[in-house]
Amino acid sequence: MKITIVGAGVAGLTLGYLLSKKGIPVILVEKEKEVGGLARSFHYENWSIDIGPHRFHTDDSLVKDFLNETMQKHLIDIPRNSKVHFFNKHYEWPLTFKSLFQLPPSLIMNSLKDLVFRPKAAGQTFESYVMSKYGKTLTDSFFREYTQKFLKVTLDQCHRDWAETGINRATIDENVRTSNIIELLLGVLSRNKINTTFLYPKNGAIDEFPKILAQKIQDQDGTILTDRKIVKIIEENNMIQSLVLSDGHELASDYVFWSGSPSNLESLLGIDDSELTFCSTVLCNLLVEGTPPVPSQWEYFGSREIIFCRLSTNTSFNPALAPPGYYGICAEIVCYEGDYVWNKGNHLLNIIIQNLIETKVVRNFNSIADVHFEKILNTYPIYKIDYHKKLKNYENKLKKIKNLLAFGRTGGFWYNNMDHSIRSSIDLSNMIDPEKLSTPKGFPFNGVFRGDF
Image (cartoon, rainbow, N blue to C red):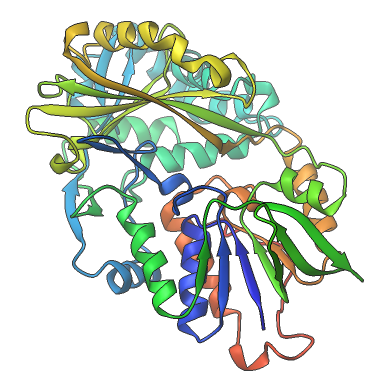
């Protein structure tokens, strides 16, 4: 049985490790030069930084066991430190009791009124959802501006699933309730401190995790091919026979797990594009002299006057990621492949630095010691108002191929984090019985797999 996994991100590597552990031979094909997908890190002359903030935090016992098994003593505990920037100030996120004395009084008063006068949800739009949950004040003062800046989509054209998922991903800790304005205000009024801790690699950046998984796969006789793209899919009788790689090699495949782009897969299969939309990100990675004036692991920036949507600081995850007396910043500018930011992102450097100084994240221009721009494709699936229909169409087309399953954050068009990707691949692995692979019904699934938890 020849199994090919396309994409060596967290989902692909986790599945590859678990299948190879069962004695099932796997080949992983990755288009980038390094494994990890969105969990890659960039290593410069004397400092390193991740693609945005990455860390492990889960209450899922299966994921905890997996991390203990694979990372063993390679992880450290770090306390959470995240922020949100609005009204020209930095606030702890989730908001704390101290925040009450920093917020504008008019915002507090109008938000209290919204406790009573919130409209009922009408329809499936992002706007309707946040208005009903948080009221007009918070919708207009933060959600609207940040989301339209981030997605380049108006709130009435975005599905409510993005709001529910996005708020959940931003909150992270299940002990912190922020699903509506009542829970948010009760959390702010409470003086009980939530001591959220994360797990992070002890000996380097977040890419230590995918590197360790890749090595374990190879130790279990699995194969990983990097810097290779799938350029052709050879199909017969609704079965994939083989995959042709960019280096000319052809991989015979009895079953294909696809964690890459849906539009790329549909193009290779010669079927219509389902138009599932992704935005991409240009990263401006800066090495800065000194200590962070506003220390945080990551911070959201909602104002349109600030070009980046989020910042992360490498030394807040692991001090060893920058030389003594320096810290690294990853400024994320969300865009679309082929637009001005994607093509000319480095032309925005002066604006980025000006914003960093204005928000007091960087002290002055002269403290910038090093700058690198990086392009990251397909970072976020965009849940437009009709995305359910498009996703179903995508799934129905893939179901016609008997030995193909799309999965993971990109392949499954699923806004998740590393912990969810791990869990979904654990579930997939548990559905595969090595003793039944040689039978016609050895694989009990095809189409699209999304964890949705």
